[in-house]
View 1 (cartoon, rainbow, N blue to C red):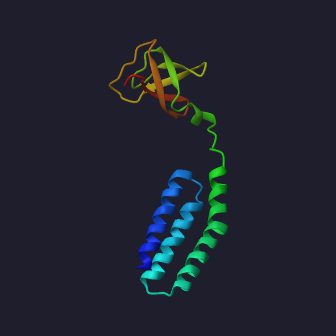
View 2: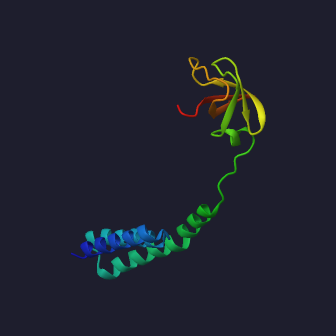
View 3: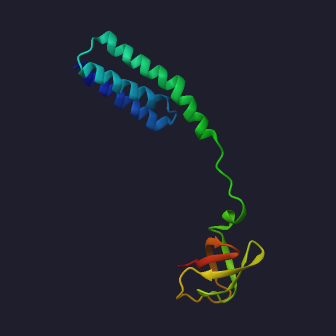
Length: 143
């Protein structure tokens, strides 16, 4: 019956983690699951508590600091042509599957439609799907 109490504790700690996102309650929930396994295997209550304490201690002292450091890292900044992907541009000369010209970030770029069957007229707005060399691969914004 002790394993059921450990599972209830694990579930309660899991719910607390869901609402706080601190990772501490999640690690304590995992430690309670270890306690449930120990109880399920028939370990005495002292061993169950010890299993919970050791698992919780390792999680909070080893795993949590590593996870917090990883989450605190700033997102990788896009630079160069990677920063242009997803931006909106204006068609200056008709864009087809072979050629075209767009205004992207204040500069004129050669462009091609991602679909060879498309012909995008001047004045249309397009989104940049990828950059191949010095050519932007685009698709109509309302596509």
